[in-house]
Image 1 (cartoon, rainbow, N blue to C red):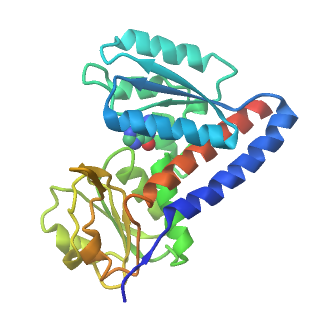
Image 2 (image 1 turned 90 degrees about the vertical axis):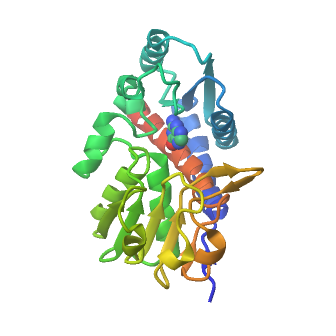
Length: 284
Ligand code: GUN
């Protein structure tokens, strides 16, 4: 039997509705508008689309988004100064620096400067380190979204063998730790893993975030596995994932589509993190 699709759009809509309702109530209580500052450096076409989508999503739930569009040749100093000023601005509750940054700017240095209490992306070392000990300030939106999608299938995570393909700081590593925290047995693989198929075939839960279109074929998937495809690759006019959907759908029990799987839930989780940053700021 072909896999059931995990409907990221429907799950995201439910989360967005919840955030919207809470924002409405809290705005009345605190009389302050929750605000996310979004910084985009340069004009990478994918990043421009992502930032536009995030801004629209904020507007839809009553969160103000201030966009800071900087030229691709902006100096590190100017960018760091902007972040410092947003850190010190009480009207700003969350700060997001869209990645990737141009090669002349150190991403690590930039992400370290964002105040941890405004780090709604969860990329600050304090948040990432907190994940390791099970107590992060914020968890990055994509790993949070992946966990939400898994939970919606009702399969249960404890005791399952989860294989994560991709070790990025944004997705692979935090997702692996979240799965471990839920008592999955976790294997982390990547595009250099020898005999990748051997490992992926062990997976009850397979998370693929390698940025390689069609990396995972149905022959590499265990019968009945739950497959979450985090890849978003432009191939010609089409957006495709890292998973060869047509062959995997015949083996898996659940699979996320691309588009309409992880992407919408990631944006919804950013809204939830921004709401959380706002609540914490208002309570201080
Ligand atoms: N670039 C790709 N994914 C992300 C993300 O989740 N956050 C930011 N800031 N940049 C990204």
